[in-house]
Image 1: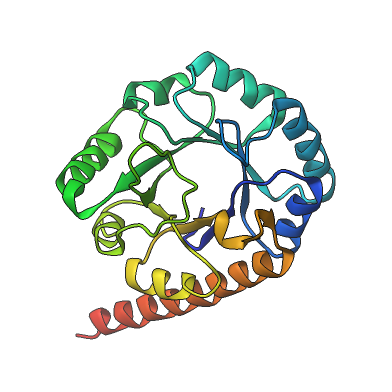
Image 2 (image 1 turned 90 degrees about the vertical axis):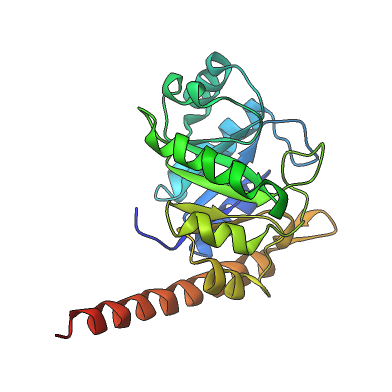
Length: 232
């Protein structure tokens, strides 16, 4: 997949899923872990069925926190997930046991910078590396979905070495700046596209549009840099 990946997470209805597709998002996320955005497996299966019929190009990601590999694989098969997001404390040894590519969450702060870098080195040196790292804010006792902004400087350091999907407090208003500073492979949001706890179609569309514009500028900048380097 090319850089410029946009995921809208915390989807709970077919209407929200199809809004994401019409907005030109690349992926949606179903949260199966305890959360106010949690969906049941049966509800996710029905939404996924509608997505496959009407927007087959939209990738479906399942978000899990410390679930057993067998449970995750069962949900993958039942719902028809394309990717698995591990957002808990799962060891890297879990990844080879899963039947889909893995987006591995890393919650970062300035105080755990070296630990985050070391985790990334181990992850991408392993026999089955993750699809990408999802870099989120570190909030003690929480596994994501907090709306708190991640450490963009640390995220940028990680993104310079490995594929990073930036999450944590992203909104239509700040995602362009985030992409410019971090230069990630992709971006992910949930609370940033909600109003009063519900997905807001206008915000969903605005988030994807702002992301696409920033990624286009990033690609153009990279192309200019490459052209300069090619000049003898």
